[in-house]
Image 1 (cartoon, rainbow, N blue to C red):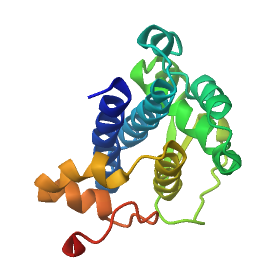
Image 2 (tube, rainbow, N blue to C red):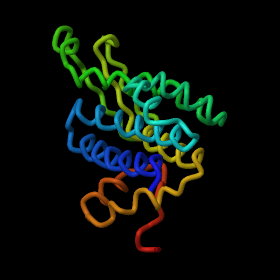
Image 3 (spheres, rainbow, N blue to C red):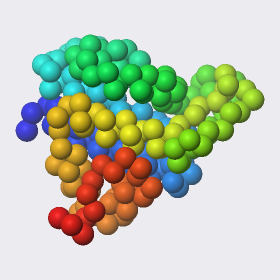
Length: 181
């Protein structure tokens, strides 16, 4: 298996774990897990284009930098639809080392369906996550990469609970109905 395939499969694990965490109310951990999912999906795409491990490591965990590099490698105009989602999700990397969030406080907002947004008063301390946007983003990444999500996500069907949280309110329709295999 090539590096990019391993990265996409690992990203799928973070994605399912992040979705579960969001629905379970594990805030802000859900955002951090979904940050890792998106990071791995993007790095998987870069690896598919020939980016080596050392270069991927130098990109670190900075989603905005990884995103800019990804868009250069994949000049798909539909990717621009997610330009605002990347910095919002990138903020969740802060909780890995929670000093700043402990110093200033943190408000986490998780939005589930499309179009529902909470606008808190203090944006500087607000970490906002839209599960629907992440679902749409992941679906678009699979299209952009020319990769079949069924291949990279069906291993989760082995565990019914993973399948449940992958499909629960997943507006992007990433996978076909499992009853129609």
